[in-house]
Image 1: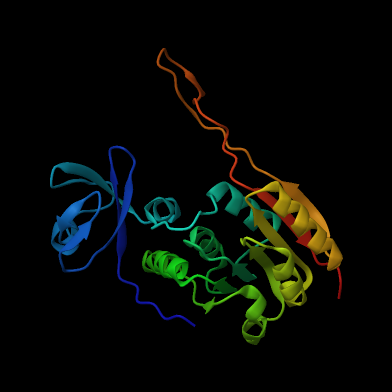
Image 2: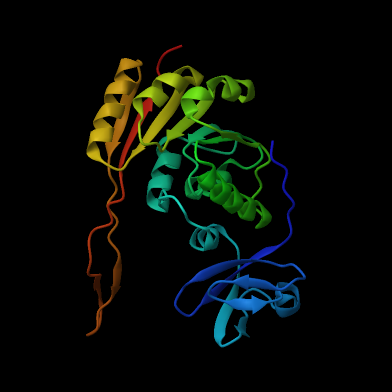
Length: 266
């Protein structure tokens, strides 16, 4: 189990909406988009909602809540957006005592959403085969915990999910939810199916439609019943130049295809 310290983290938001997570420590830091400054001496007398000038830029100090943590997180791998994370959490029934296995940590965007829900009462296991992704994802999770997100039962495993089943089963062998964000799903599905409790659900995040079909076939082969498959389209609105509000120009917000299946077997 990973052990974390929990000093205070705050968020600085500039006039363009860019958000930066800042740890309140007594040393000079260089943060891209802000500059070089000492967070303790600069921010110690500033409270949430206050405006502060650092260098030539003005910022608003905010608590590092979930939206700020998401905006300010470091990014390397393609991330699962909040709209898709919300669907997974809701349709899979993830709650405060859930046991969740997540393969494909990446930059940790889904992980910080899950941590915000699971808290101390559940179990969260992440698996990642690429250490360069793990370094970024685990750092984002650490920042979330330092921001006040309580999650005392997180375990991380380096390696392929297919090679990690024995290690995972020592932590938990009756998961409520398994989420797979991987290039190839069928071998992963067959590897972890027996780690899913009766009534538990498995989800696949699929950038292309052919992955949905292969995941669908693999789930049915393993005796899982498909509950939902599809995509979420996000369409943002903004103010029109001549007054009123309207859909903004640009493409609809497709991110990926999603699939959720349930285990109805003992």
